[in-house]
Length: 269
Ligand SMILES: *[C@@H]1O[C@H](CO)[C@@H](O)[C@H](O)[C@H]1NC(C)=O
Ligand SMILES: *[C@@H]1O[C@H](CO)[C@@H](O)[C@H](O)[C@H]1NC(C)=O
Image (cartoon, rainbow, N blue to C red; front, side, top):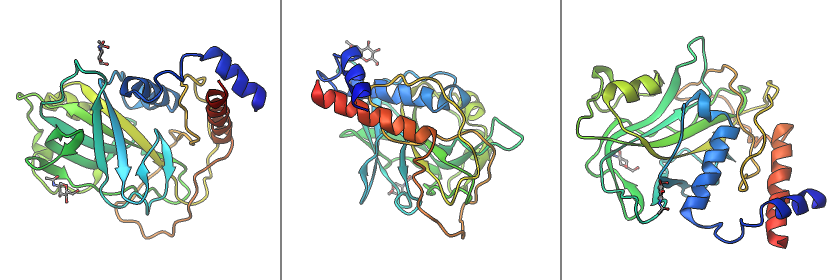
């Protein structure tokens, strides 16, 4: 561990300088998205211009991919958004979506929609929904017990004035259901992804083995378990008992060690 941390400290001498800036933290999120497979399995590309931070009462700001319990993420979170730099404007209209990227039946293009709000704004570095339309109100994660870690991805899209919601998702109060996120984005005319982040929830004992992912790329990896893309189902309103499991096993442990080693490395640098 110590040797590893020194190695990271040696190859990443620049990290201590600006490790708090939005631009730097955005790079960390990009690396997480690639490493956890969200890019390219859910999003073919990801080049955000702002930092999205998910904040739950009683938990605080989540780190990218942070493992949390179903209980912790039951209430609607606050979504903070910070521009990468002063030339990025966040004055437009946006669509906010949250999907479970780990619901893969036979239709691999389907994800479960947990939140979809059109016409949100960014005000004082926070997503404000005062003049928005909630197509699907926030519905907290509820993965099936034993279905492994689920990655819940929260995405802020540009919503140009030409945006037109598809007929089946144009009215408020539509419950949680599967949909094809990418087809929705394309058909409705949504613009670029401005910012995104994700969290991980696992309920019960996983029966899945974690598959290998790409090499560690980020200098800001947090000790999390990335979800595998194995099929699983999810109910909107589960009755199963929940056992908190942040899943620090196998690959997760390796990543946790790297993350910790790196943090130590930075501290020592
Ligand atoms: C500001 O951030 C945007 C989006 O990440 C990037 O394209 C642009 O090059 C940045 N500009 C400066 C001056 O750093
Ligand atoms: C706005 O957010 C509040 C608090 O999370 C929520 O109760 C309300 O339903 C939301 N309204 C819309 C239109 O999204």
